[in-house]
Image 1 (cartoon, rainbow, N blue to C red):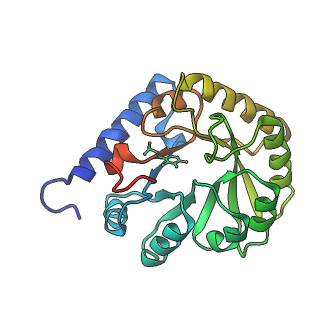
Image 2: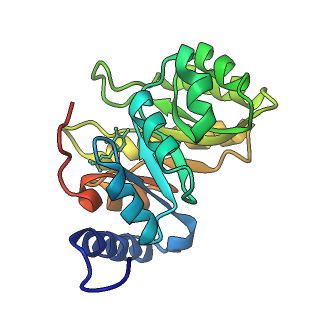
Length: 228
Ligand SMILES: *Cc1c(COP(=O)(O)O)cnc(C)c1O
């Protein structure tokens, strides 16, 4: 896929990677500490295949049925699928067949369901910083309880904490709150060092606040065909 002029997708990917490197340097961090997940919800499988051809290894999806179909179609590609949207407990076992990491753990029943999956799953506990219904997440105290519950499951790896910054307001405040929760989780679970934060509009702030897993959609993919 490297023949001919570089595609618009390749250009955007390179541009975002350069901005990630700049933000990491400004924060005194190495870009090697960061996992850049390309969120491909609503995008066609052809784009995901092209991304894989450009070296992308981590992709994110937020709707189970769509993700399941795409992962099945692209099974031959060396991709790691991250589930970043709200997940019903009754779909968790199915999601665990293709998703290696679930960023949106926000219920005990979901922990229990994932723990019953056929393979190990990496888990982020999602903190709600938006107060917006439908975006998932729990408050800090509940997040700590869920972290304990994940850590207690042999088949689950507690990776850390995740949040979406509110649409309004300063994302730095939101990321500082998430960082606080991360510190509290790590006090009990020293291995849970990861922080999933930062989207197209705020990833530089997230990197400054210690994010390790960036979830980037439109800045790399371009606009989503249909946003729902
Ligand atoms: C869609 C989505 C993203 C990516 O958002 P962009 O603004 O397109 O970068 C990240 N995280 C979650 C949970 C999402 O649903």
